[in-house]
Image (cartoon, rainbow, N blue to C red):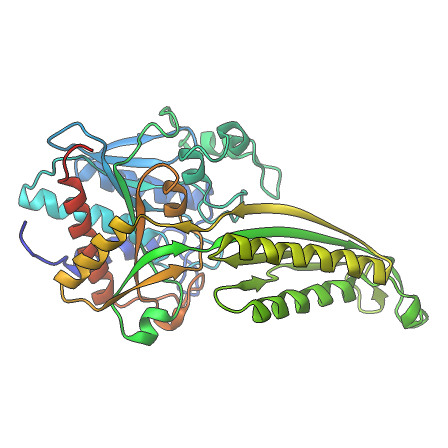
Length: 412
């Protein structure tokens, strides 16, 4: 096929037009899964898919698939990502991969080019996991890793059920989850980290993705007067929470390598300046690319919690929120991405992803890989999230080349 690069104007127009749906005063996007803003975003996506001649299918978890027929009725090549955001989201996370998939279709339509295999552009439900748990829910259900009914019965902080919200927004589809089993899945995404920019590279060929362990930890102590209770007689849940925060940071620094650890949410009760906290609730996020190492970090945290509880006379309970093993992407697909970048003269490297993505779930059922483009200053989940137009276009061009190569492969 012709070595024509993607035009950034049409891609940017779609990204920015979609970014107005759920736009915030700070310049970002708040389009949390299955809110009214998400419904509007879905409606716009479906309209664009139909304008491009794609056959639109929605499955029972609300995943949206736009199908472009191939010359043969073989397993399709799928691309895509998600359109939901965090509350303080930027304009590129997730949506870039979906819009770039549409642009590949638009360019093929303009040329009158047919691929041997069908192409599918996907938008998966509730990738961020902000409102309903777990995150990456739509792709996980599609891949058979999470029961559909359990997903539908998930409730948000206000007690609203996911299945009811699908009905309310009009995206409780008829297609069976997992009905489309791809020949390959390739997800294009902003890096959400600083590596590519720091090294002056255009493309990341993502070879693996960190495992994720999320836990909610509840410390129960005793509320008491902050002025009259001697330090050695306190059962201070606030102190214990602080000690856990310090421990997980020191654990990550001690392990080194790709180990990271984060306490992202922490609340105290009764949360008063002159009262010892009776209860602390916090989350711990542990990630590593090596499963045995991640398990060792989990064991060390569990042992520390037990020792801390005994030492401080408190009760500490840990509840798992999400657990995903590390993923190694298909080496052949990673090589295809590298070859496409080289053919376009784009500097590239193999790399790991520290964030979770739909591609890691799709890797359970088909060969999968990811393409990264740089993120300015490594900022994401933030209104300041930005990738230069030329870099967005370069990523979309590599995606186009990889998808076309895979979609023209024969049976097998």
